[in-house]
Image 1 (cartoon, rainbow, N blue to C red):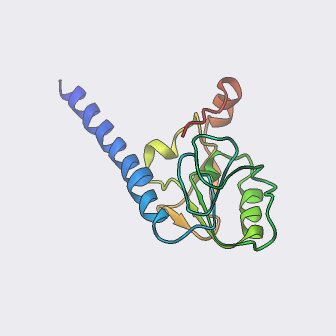
Image 2: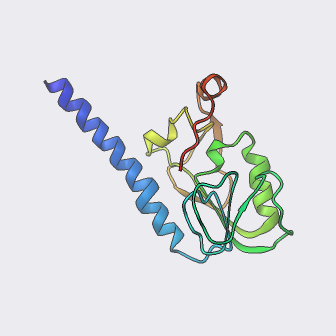
Image 3: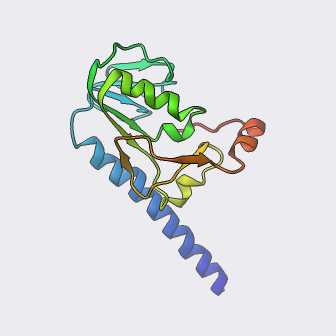
Amino acid sequence: MKILAIIIIIYVLIWSLNYISYVILKNRILKLKKWALNICCGKTNGNGINVDIIKHDQLPNFVIVDVYSLPFKDNQFENVLSSHTIEHLTDPDCFFKELQRVGNNVTLVIPPLWDISAVFNVFEHRWIFLSLKKVHNNLPKYVPLPLSKFIQEYLGQKISA
């Protein structure tokens, strides 16, 4: 019985950290300023141009894009937000350079190391970003997420929003 109670407590703790990270903190970041470009939107309106690789929901000013070759001019946007996107991609460096090309102020929102369920999500993520912070204006150091490449090659990358 004690083991079951411990498992339940750990599960609730991990779920709570993920909820704090993905829902509460992400919503606070969205409200900080008007995001001229919101790349990663899924179902989130950044109040500017919203872009993603597929359409998840009805959003205003929505554009489907290739994230490595954005269809925008150099320095077209003052504030660019990329939230919970870069950990899914095959080439984070190329993506970040493309964000810097189109935006003057780039903000990355990543799963911080304390958000265990997001960091070790081998079905969706490819990289672990070595940071306890959620918000970055530069690309933090990162390492491959163990087993993710193998699992995603055989099962496909699960994308959900």
